[in-house]
Image (cartoon, rainbow, N blue to C red; front, side):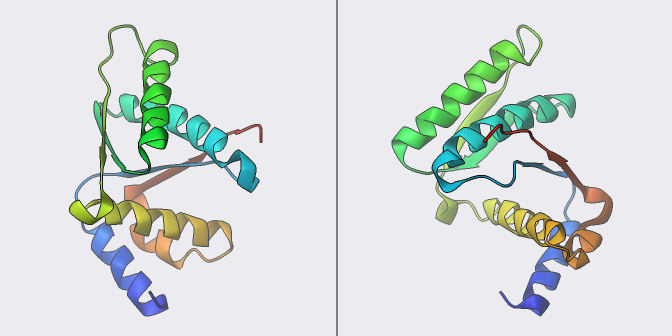
Length: 137
């Protein structure tokens, strides 16, 4: 998308109900991407629980990587969430669930902000919550 299209996409996302919660682990060396994803996902599960969210939809990747995500979420349920907490996760192909595109738009806005361009996060305003995650990478 060009800048105008990204701004319109951010406006559309901002008009949706709910919050957009983003965990950011950066910078990450290419060979440590999965470790950083796991750390961010662990923290995201904790934050989502705080907002009363019990179901997480993730964009599907390769089966092995999807299984790794599920293990990370299971570990988070045991280590960072109160005992007995329910947190379900499903992997959905991006092409089958257009709402996953919202995540891409929000992630792009946060990335642009961290590179000095806050025009998209400004449009998202109070609907956006982002936080840093120590990935130890």
